[in-house]
Length: 508
Image (cartoon, rainbow, N blue to C red; front, side, top):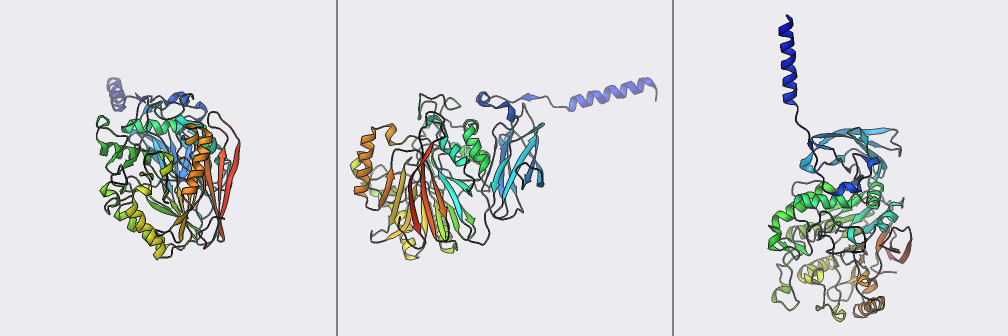
């Protein structure tokens, strides 16, 4: 080959290579980079796991590249905390279409086993996460932390930090209000340097993604996700306040099309939470912990909730077509209850199920119309079903109210008890004593107890979480409270404890 031809071919090859190389586009900053811990690059948002089964579990992370591109991410699973013996690994590609989140459904794992996992990408490694599969067909004890209402602007996540320190949990059950949609200063403690991003009420896909990104940069939120698998359900603030299937109290015409807002909110949720993907994006599901617990997670917002009423005097208040779950989910729920062979049926329920008379508290309504009290026809169906089918050992859990509750759930005729209901306080979201003097709140607790004899415990003042310890013989319920929200703190107290014996719908 002569020298002219050789240099011509070299020049042509160089030109083609340059032409094929895509220009690097810097990744736009959503404002959250001020919270980045550079030691974690590019895995600033930590790791998470969730939806454990006997032989599989979801592992999650998020890569933050410098430039827009496709990013191959390697994942590793080990039985050792230092990742010294990788037993499973693989590679998955992420990109901007999924906000650079990574979610892997790891299969063929051993039941009731603790695993450790880690991700690698862009010459960096994530922190090491810990997770655990569920038991198979046995009566192993189960311990669950139950949480809700983790408003970033309302305070520090001290309760999450305490949960992260517990080594004996099987999972953390988050009952919703994982994020809040409000603009900075819209709902929270304005004295704290914890302002929402983006600096507006979130309505678009990029808005919801940024809000999740901000929450997941909090060190205590990262730590609790790192140490325990989560089982989550949405409530209203993952979309907008008091949301239902076709609208929301906090959605106005200037916010755009509601159905579009709902769908992008759901998309961001599935991107950022360690939940198992499905084609319909329905989120009600059952997680089985051997023969000890069936955890039945309900969707009481987006799957079937119809329009709310403004008053119990409205003619449609008792209408049969006003539903919380909807016909499809209700039929599924009944089937899960009747076919369950677990000792305990724990219901992941967002809003209070038990009837609760609040007529003397000055709210202008005798009941909370956003809770099951506002959907009496469908609640009656469920109550009658539990009684008629003699479903035993039902423990209903509830969030939403930012308060602690313990109900012996009455039948419709109030002659028997059909279940136990446990309300978990908020992680941070405001409760009554942040709006009212403590003396008045204590009086309100007494009024509630007097008006509702089936209400055995309520606390409208403290923040924290619930721990359920379930065995073949009994369920122990413990409320843990942190001492403050306005600063980091490692202090907590055991506020209350009850025991529920197998076969006895009574709080002891």
